Image (cartoon, rainbow, N blue to C red; front, side, top):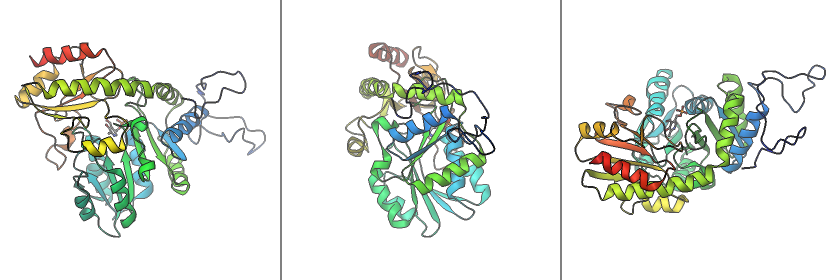
Amino acid sequence: MHAGQEPDPLTGAVVPPIYQVSTYKQDGVGGLRGGYEYSRSANPTRTALEECLAAIEGGTRAMAFASGLAAEDCLLRTVLGTGDHVVIPNDAYGGTYRLFSKVYERWGVQWTAVDFGDLDAVRAAVQPGRTRALWVETPSNPLLGVSDIAGLAGIARETGALLVVDNTFATPYLQQPLALGADVVVHSTTKYIGGHSDVVGGALVVADGTLGERLAFHQNSMGAVAGPFDAWLTLRGIKTLAVRMDRHCQNAAAVAQMLAEHSKVSEVLYPGLAGHQGHEIAAKQMRGFGGMVSFRHAGGEAAAVELCGRTELFTLGESLGGVESLIEHPGRMTHMSAAGSPLEVPADLVRLSVGIEDRADLLADLARALG
Ligand SMILES: Cc1ncc(COP(=O)(O)O)c(C=O)c1O
């Protein structure tokens, strides 16, 4: 709540002001006040956010971007070159997959998609001397797969690859990948960190200072930075991250349990359920199991699509992690770009971002919509 946000020295304002400014007066050429010269390079509101993000992820440096994909792009262009190879998960956000398959492939970067829940499969996919990064989402979007971050960090160290963890679903309140050996944490701050469906943003956080310097150089050189108002909204979101996440976790656990007992649901994907593939690892590396729940409709694709249009409290829409509950059909919405690929999602899948509304209201809405 407080990191990077000392009360304003001039006025005592307890919240960092929105420095809606592009440039800064210099006291003589090169005489910068506090290091600020131009807001692409640095802006005080963004600095406050970046210091806060570094602190909550237990890193030494963070960089805030205009979107999660802008953060991913900055990372990839910093650490990869033509001819390099990346191991990616066979379950991940469709836009991340599209970045690898439709953008980076054209620049000669190759990828192999594997099940990151299987450490042997990850090890086998590494191409010695060519694989620069292992890229994992845990829990993953949208199948809620869980991967062993410490185990993957071991493989990354053995092979000289970087371990990149997209921590968007878990947030640093529930999981701190750097402490488990990851090299880079990626966020779509659009989601839980922002928390109110009112801002698009992204972040990179690292522990290693040299890598931090290289990323900061590329952030400034490529320029997809977070604007001051977006940085301010994101900081405001972080102040309530812990209390929101506790409530998201409680509500999601209740929703998962209710769905698991429902005759129209063939499978519930939630790491908090004892039968989940990654339950034990999640219990070890996470403080709670998060607010995302996916499930497969026993009635197939048409029934899943129809259900998404029938809830009232769960709003039909893309994105996730806001205080209000959302429902979507990944196959036709967020993950359409993965159709026909190793990352294709089941057609009967429904994804819920369980919000912080009254639990009984959420359960009643789903029960009514399921019929
Ligand atoms: C897990 C994950 N990573 C990255 C992204 C991309 O972030 P953004 O939409 O902020 O560019 C998303 C977006 O949904 C996501 O769910």
